[in-house]
Image (cartoon, rainbow, N blue to C red):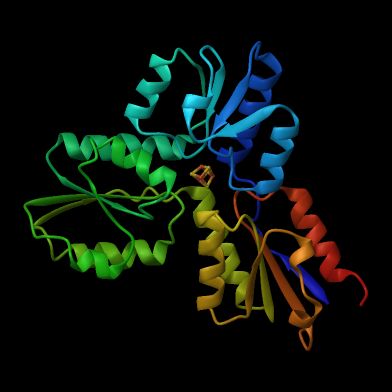
Amino acid sequence: MKVILAEYAGFCFGVKRAINTAQKAAAKAKGKIYTYGPLIHNPQVVQKFEKAGVHAVSNIKKVGKGASLVIRTHGVPPETEKEFARKALNIVDATCPFVKKAQKLAAGLEHEGYQTVIIGEAHHPEVKGILGYTGNKAVVIGSSAEAHKIKKCGKIGVVVQTTQSMDKFLKIVSLLMDKAPEIRVFNTICDATKKRQESALKLAGKVDIMIVVGGKNSANTKHLAELCEERGVPTYHIEGALELKKSWFTGKKVAGVTAGASTPDWIIKTVIKTINAPA
Ligand code: SF4
């Protein structure tokens, strides 16, 4: 079996930065150290941090005063930051600069009187954070059907979750054009996402099967798998080599591998090695 790895796959700039930041903070921390939610959407990396004494918490009531708390790449709403400050926590901010940019643009649109629209997944922490920067006044839409439901108004401002697919973004924006005479659109899809999506699509066009590696709860990994599927190639989304099934590869000559922005290199390498292992 020939295996080709996508030109851009695996850890992005924001994830590498968050991991380095958390490691340095853990080395320096005098008291307990936590991450607000899992640091990245990858269970293996989160387990490694747990073993090193950096625990993920979803409720800061469990965090004692003065402890260190790492904010992950997705960021948090301003009211959550204030809550951290009230608890006198030592905050280590690993919010990705691309996410910060989307937060700032959304806040600016709201301030300038636009009906802000966030294109993305309403339940995703990044989207919740951006929404917070609009005073929770923005509308979140995740599909064309939801775009149709937007009420007509004077002016609409748009930002998009950093890991959305360009296709979906463009489709929804074109539907919004009908909703207001003035539309201001910021394409806040990050560069790492764009590159991973483009190279996955390119690869999917020339292989018999695509294996997409990454956390099942990782938005950008899920979008990579959706894109490859839409391209018409049999696609499997796995978190690690143990999930690979020999039957998937029967009759196939070339396999493509790609991975989400929160998938470590060693997991990608193990997957490639396992596909290549003799039957
Ligand atoms: S996927 Fe993009 S926005 Fe998310 S952490 Fe990576 S670089 Fe930042």
